[in-house]
Image (tube, rainbow, N blue to C red):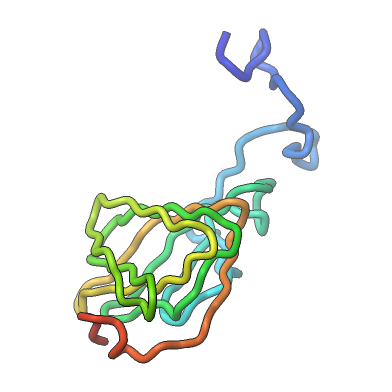
Length: 161
């Protein structure tokens, strides 16, 4: 018997909240092109939701794709109480943080990042020719609190495309 599954394949545990209109509890697939773009954006950082409270029965998870066009960045923001994890699919990113966004980490394809709750940061595409694309997940939902804009000159090494 698999963990979380009762004999005969039926669900074990209280999952009724995830039942569809027909009463069946089943995975929910968001097809390519049907993702939600009804998310909070931060400047030129575009978030597309694949799993969220907006279009699935999820109640404690947001999972989506984030992209920055070449040479563009987010506005300063934080994600409130949410813990955030990211995985770089392609491109060259930099996450600025700390006093006056004077600290940073560079990331490339295959890198993972964790951003603690309430941490102000800026996500930047460091390439002026290629998109930066990453997967992001956070709990409990896609909380985005935009902060006051900063001039590009404050972000060491960043230049627009």
